[in-house]
Length: 443
Ligand code: UDP
Ligand code: UDP
Ligand code: UDP
Image (cartoon, rainbow, N blue to C red; front, side, top):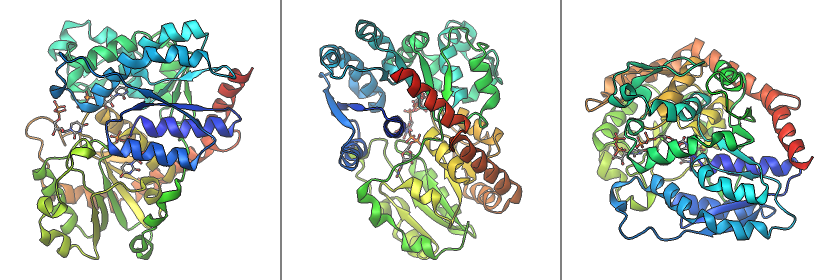
C-alpha cells in the first residue's frame, strides 16, 4: 500500500493538470487491501484508464517460502514486465511518459528506449532514504560496510546515517531484495526525474545535496511535488466516527503501524497496557500479520476480552482498514504513534499531527530521524533494535505523555503543517514543480 497510494495520488494530480492517465497494475496482488483499494479507486475515478498486467507464474525451482511476499511481488513483476512492450506500442494517443517504481527501472529501460518514452521514478520514501538507495551500489562494494564495521555510514553531502538505521538486508547482497535494489539503483540515471512525495522545506539540505550532484553526479533532478493530496473513495462514509466527534480537540492518540508491519504479540500487549494506563484517549488499529490474507487472529485472543471492556469509552481498538487520512485530519486527533512509513509521515505533516516515531523495519528508522529533525515528532533511537527490542509499557506511557502534552512539539508540528500548505498552494514550491513536469510532458 505504501507504493500504491502515492502512485494513485500522483495519477490524480497529473489528471487535474490536464494529462490523460492509464494506471497499470499487476494481477494478482499480494494483499486484499491492494485489490480492494484498486477497484474502489477505479470506480470512484472512471476517468483513469486501467490496464492489468497478468503476472507470469514464478519458476517452480524458485523457493518462494523464504522471501517476504511483498518483495517477491517486485521480482514477479520484473519477470513479467516484458509483456508490456507490444501493448504500450499500440497506445493511442501515444504515451508521453511512464511513471515507474524504482524496483522495475532496470528491466524497463530497453522498452522505454524502444518506445522513446521518458521515465519518471516516484520515490516512495524520504529523500534521505533515497540518497541511501542511490548510494547503495557504492556501499555494497565496501567490505567494511558489508561486515557491519561502521558505526555511522557516510554518504557524500548528507548527514551520516547511524549504522543501526540501515535495513539489515542491505548488508547481504545475495538476497533477491538487495540484489534487485542494487541493480535498479545503478539505472537511476536513466530517468528524467525523481518525483518526491515531499516538500522542499521538510528535507531542504538533503534535497540540496541530491540536486547539487553531491551524493552522485549522475542523479536526475529530485522534484518535490508533495505532500500529495489524498482522495476520497465513495465507500468510506461509514467511517464518520461519532465517537471521535465527541472528543475534545487534540485529545486522542491515533496508533497505527501501516499496512504491512505486524508487532509481536508480546509487544502488542505492552502497548495495550500503556494505552490503558495513560491519561489519554486512543484510536488503535492492530495488525498481527504482514499480509492481510493470512490474518486469522481475533482481537480478543491477542489482547484478552478484559482489555476491550476496560477501555470502553476511553479508546477504540480495531482490526480493519481505516481511512487514515480522515482520522489524521479530525480535530480530535492530537498525536500519532507511527512506524514512519513515508506516506504516514507526509499525511501527518499535512495535518500537523505530532508523531511518536516507532520505526520497526526497512526505511522506517531513516524516516524517523527525518521526522525528528524536521520537528514533526519525537524518536527514541533505542526502541526496536535487535533481539532485546521489547519496549515496556511504562516507557511507552512516558513517551505518550510527552507526545500529548509538549507544547513546543505541538507548535513545531503546526509549523510543519503551515510549510506543507505553502508548498502545495498555487505558486508554492511543490505546485510550481508539478506544473513544470506537466509542461515538459505536453511540450
Ligand atoms: N492506510 C490506511 N488505512 C489503514 C492503514 C494504512 O489508509 O488502515 C494508508 C496510510 O494512510 C498510508 C498507507 O496506507 O497512505 C500506508 O503507507 P505507509 O508508507 O505509511 O506505510 P506501509 O504500509 O507502506 O508500511
Ligand atoms: N515484519 C512485518 N513487516 C515488515 C517486516 C517484518 O510485519 O515490514 C514482521 C515479520 O512478519 C516477522 C518479523 O517482523 O514476524 C521479523 O521480520 P523479518 O523476517 O523481516 O526479520 P528482520 O531480519 O527484518 O528483523
Ligand atoms: N523500498 C523502498 N523503495 C523501493 C524498494 C524498497 O522504499 O523501491 C524500501 C522497502 O519498502 C523497505 C526498505 O526499502 O522499507 C528495505 O526494507 P528491508 O529489506 O529492511 O525490510 P524488512 O525485511 O526489514 O521488512
